[in-house]
Amino acid sequence: MTRGTGAHILRRVNRKARQAERSRAPGFGPRAPLRVGDARGVVYGTLSPELREQVAGWIEAGEVPGAEPIKGRRVVRHGELLVKFVRRSRSAVPLRRSRVLRAAAAHERLAWVPVPAPLFALDLPRGAHYEGLIAMRFVDGRPLHELDGSGEAIDALGELIARLHDRGVHHGDLHAQNLLWDGRTWWLLDLDGVRSPLHLVLERRLEMRQWGKLLLTPTLAQGTIRRAFDRYASLRPALGDREAAWKRVQAYAAEMFYRRALRSDLPSPAQRGPGLPDRVDSGASR
Image 1 (cartoon, rainbow, N blue to C red):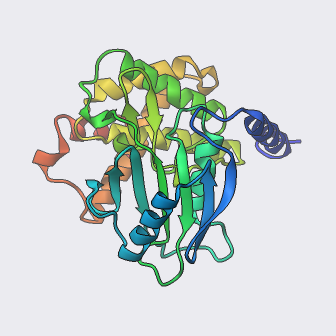
Image 2 (cartoon, rainbow, N blue to C red):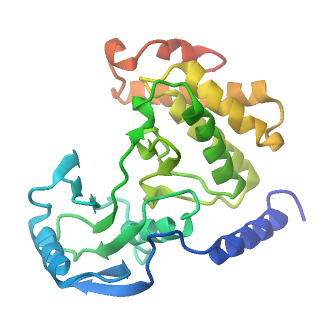
């Protein structure tokens, strides 16, 4: 059995089985089917009649009236809940479970990270503006790009990503806004893109690409990400030479940087933050 094929797949199956045996984190109630009008999904615990009536109004209006906006009207805070409307995907795969239900399942599966405990997740009917709706506990914290880049938070970030990768979990959109520090621990957000690659080569590539995306955070100095990466590498000896791994991170950062430029999506020099051109040019090839 060659490396990256049968043996690696078996290792993944065993790993998934161990994850499934993990107990739910506090805040996860018993999962049950949920239906609100024509919307169907799951609920963790129970949904009060008052909240069910409110949710029906949110679905009809396509927004949560009076809520505090976090990302426009699509992601808002409603009391102790974070409510997120999931956009419809243009490349949706027929007969595949919706993104909102995949996200709810990921929240439950990754309760050890930690992640916000969901209250409910709903697939919306075809005529609705959005594909789905998910509500979870609101976590009060600061995203990575708002930190000063010093202290235990940065070391803890490297430890978190090492734990994720050791368990074969890869966030499809790991950037600064999806990492929240509450003063004691990191919270992982936006889980509909979580994936588990089966092939070892693809896994290593995804790991370095995720660090490359973090390296492009305009408000963070290169030294901050390097400190987190060094802590990460110290916990993952399988990476091999640390400097060679860091050069691969820089190369992936450069690749993403120039792709954005080709799409005319590159921020202006004033928006890039100090040192961004230096960090992507160093050790990277076009």
